[in-house]
Length: 127
Ligand code: HEM
Image (tube, rainbow, N blue to C red; front, side):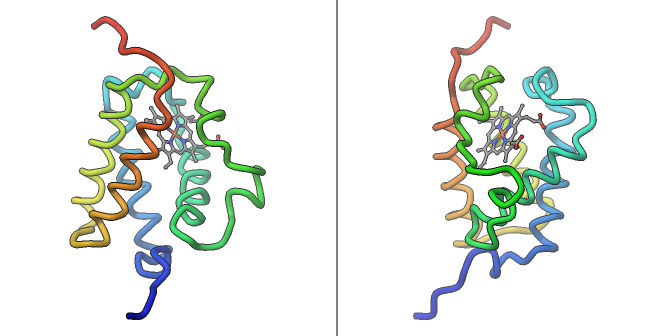
């Protein structure tokens, strides 16, 4: 069976669509608004670079920003279980919007679930 690099299977254009659809939701999510900047332009650019290498494409993130150390880079923010859940909900909806499905979506999403849980560094806050 031929092995395909996930980044190539998805394609740069689809990845860009996905990340834009994702941050459009992040910008409106009550649990996420408090910790994200108002202007998400730079966040979107970095996330596309990161996801490109996360999916086996060129190391665009590392080339510009150095070692990802994603958990460390999230330490400035309170990443609670509720926020991890919200992040993943935004991603699932974005995947629906751009039409990701099947085994590819399943595998990609499960990886993101693991990474999101790894990022948690704070307890839920009181409502
Ligand atoms: C940056 C929140 C999970 C990748 C950020 C920022 C916040 C944030 C607030 C800073 C945005 C900015 O200042 O531009 C969260 C929350 C998560 C989560 C609440 C829930 C678990 C993830 C996951 C990944 C990821 C699962 C990767 C698979 C990134 C990247 C950046 C970032 C690449 C940019 C880092 C940089 O500034 O160079 N995240 N994140 N995040 N996040 Fe997350």
